[in-house]
Image 1 (tube, rainbow, N blue to C red):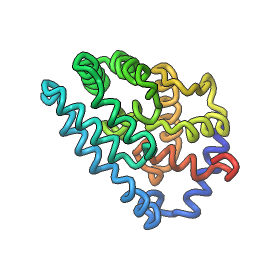
Image 2: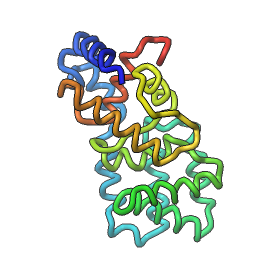
Image 3: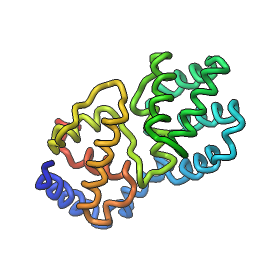
Image 4: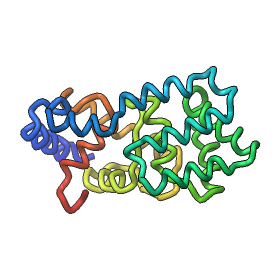
Length: 209
């Protein structure tokens, strides 16, 4: 990992935004993404006791993706239509996967959801990581492909080879690197992992964004 580049990026960011993510310009961006409101929605909608209502969970999954500003506008209607078109058995598997992803065996849940998305040619990093990130923004990471690829390349993260198809092993290692990088940075960068990846994206050379 190029910690020298990380420290240089931090210096540049805090020079421009002395209050970090509490700077006025950054607060406007944070308000646009509305992460805290979506987090509250997800924590309530995907509470353990709600998972007995499969159709309700499916609709709330659609609702989250439709409201998530970091998910591509092109993916929102495709996910909505695909999720609603699933058979009862596939909807139950998707909901089971989400339960495990958030409350049980995370790897099992990741792969269960991935299987369903693959069947519909919807296996997108942004979709599967959105459920994890919005539920636990301080622990999980949102994976936007271009940003992920550039962070790996620019900061020379070892052992990470990006592939379009999501994989749990890659996610765990990428998350580990982001959390380590965040721990090295000033607290003004914030505790939110999407904020951390956003900070890295903003401070990379313009040709790498």
